[in-house]
Length: 117
Image 1 (cartoon, rainbow, N blue to C red):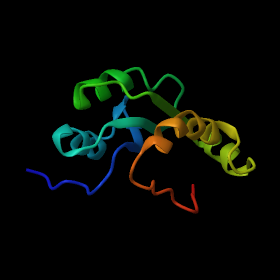
Image 2: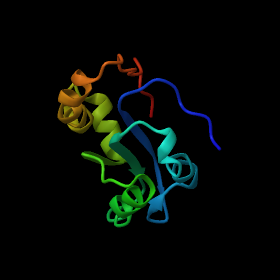
Image 3: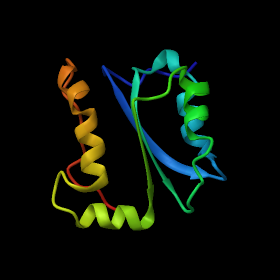
């Protein structure tokens, strides 16, 4: 049995898409939903257009629910997002859509100060 990840009310997870599916390490992480807080957001990176066909079914199968927000990014999307002013662009919009849920959390969210490609 896996160890719990620590105190959290909500969880946003991310990782790459491999051959149209969530990457194996992320799949293994999500396979034990009993040890996870509710997953409210998922972001993925992908190499090709259309490589996310199995994303929501994978997440639902692994966690039991489809997260409220899913963000799929290609390399050029990440470059654009990093060049955008803070809080703008696709990443900022993703976080803004999750903000009402994060504000209800009783545990302070951890957000990395610097995101590197």
